[in-house]
Image 1: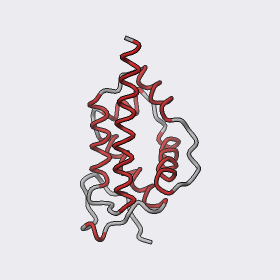
Image 2 (image 1 turned 180 degrees about the vertical axis):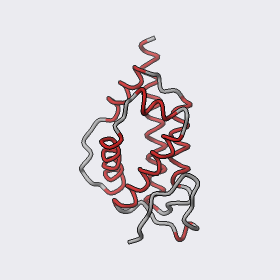
Image 3 (image 1 turned 90 degrees about the horizontal axis):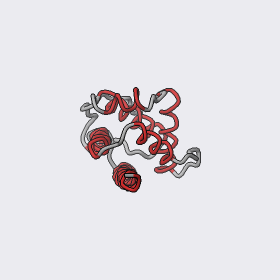
Length: 146
């Protein structure tokens, strides 16, 4: 098994044939931690996570890792309903198309040059689907309340 360190945004470990896939917990955890570093370096996204949602990263990151372990490896550790948390956040500060695009952009950029393979492709597809569904549900909910 290849060891993946926690890289800084924009850092690359090699060409696609040399890159690890998101096929084990270690790689998924590295992906999640790198992704959150990107989010927290973003001047629009960081306040949303830290000031509005008041995310406790020590508690939040293991939960997000569990989510991706479930989605990519089929593990059963994640048993939460993410929409409830996002609805509550959207009530405090509306999550706009810009937020969704930034989140997805950081997710994709975090994978680029760091991970490659079928599990990584699946992660891209899941992230796109999750962001689309989240945006549609929150937008529809706000429109009904207006």
